[in-house]
Image (cartoon, rainbow, N blue to C red; front, side):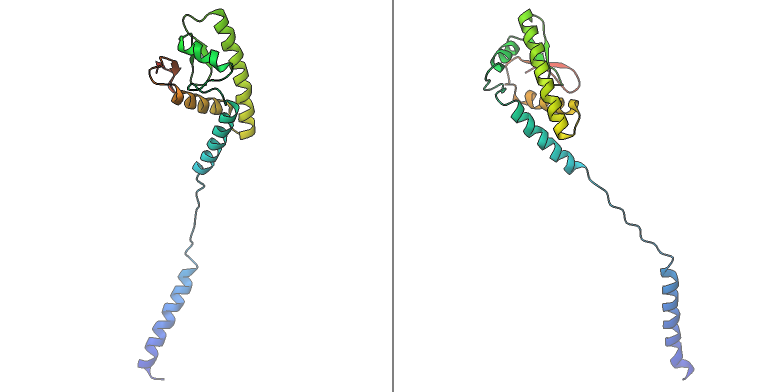
Length: 156
């Protein structure tokens, strides 16, 4: 073999040897990130569905059953809804109003606990979802008292 012909072969061999030698020094690290938003959305949808089922008939627009009395009490401004979806007596609440508020809150807390347990979320998370749903359904101009997320009392 001539010296000139072996130079390209030698260069190719040296390049391959260097590539194999350096190839062992490189590491590739891949990381995957689990995005909880899908899980949160699925849980929220489940909670919303269970809240709708548990509180069917308790719409501010079309109240049914005992909720007719509760809506009337709220429209008289004897009660407001706090940011945990619980009723609170306001100025002018009668003793009967206070009894109805206590009974309603006790019944609602049982529902919230059941939904929280079946959904795997906290009771407070269920309450806040219900409070948000209720606030959104209070008719504008009704004067009904509600507490926003920050704790401030407002009227719609």
